[in-house]
Length: 168
Image (cartoon, rainbow, N blue to C red; front, side):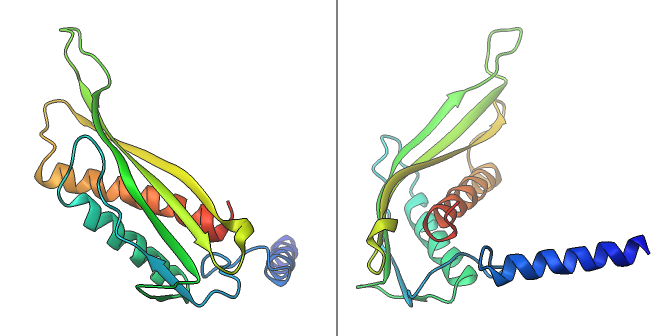
């Protein structure tokens, strides 16, 4: 009896949420937009990682094409993203008893301009930032760098998605 009541309550809740348009399981609310334009994000940070601009731009494009029905275009997109990578910084985090760093932190910050040609009130310019901690005895190359970039870029692109079309 309890199980049946639970299932009925769950179905009513999902029906209400989906019926009200409060949430979409396929991604954000793109409104009447049909196309998306994501310009290349140049690396303007004082410290430059050569692959970062291309990887960030590609991952942002991939996220939107995977999670929405928008078509990627090179000009005149209904939704338009542009900006630059403004910070790529490595800082020591925690110290050891010998007064050396036990951990380092890679932080990446991206300045993003979002233009919604159909809904001007949704436009914004914001900075998105995230970090990755790694051991001070590790070099930020190869697998460590790849893992760090993947984690940071995944988080930043998801935050951009949430801010622009998911409205979180």
